[in-house]
Image 1 (tube, rainbow, N blue to C red):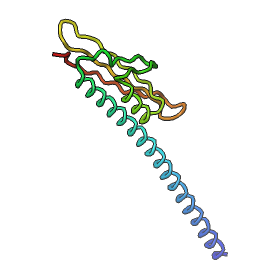
Image 2 (image 1 turned 30 degrees about the horizontal axis):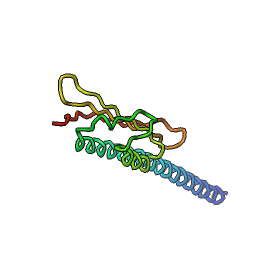
Image 3 (image 1 turned 90 degrees about the vertical axis):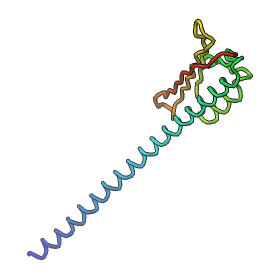
Image 4 (image 1 turned 30 degrees about the vertical axis):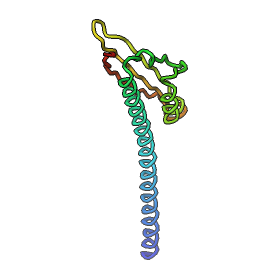
Amino acid sequence: MKRRSVLGFAMVESLVAVLLLAVGVIGTLTMQARAFGAFSDATQRAEATIATDKLIGLIRNDQANVASYALAAGATPGAKLSAWYNETQTMLPGASVQVTVSAVAGTSRNIVDVQIQWRRKQGAALMTHRVTAYVAGAA
């Protein structure tokens, strides 16, 4: 009688081991999926940062025409912005871009506010990257 209970106990031990292994594998897969999502978010934030940096650089190199870089959300970009805008749309599909240019009273400086919004995937929360820069006016 003892032998039968010992054999049954070995079977229970094996089932518990398989159950623990399954829980571990499921946990590992869940962590992997979350890491992939976080990586995707970080990649898109980096692309938005690079895009705003490029635009601020373009504006600083063309200070005489700062006002021509303004772009309302959902508007069609002008000639100065179209290449940058198309590149940004390639990197962040469906992104909404808004560029506000306003003069600082009593100075030759301008405030340039760039805002890029996008969704990582359908139904996800709206992500926003916003940069405000001061650009000296043309000398």
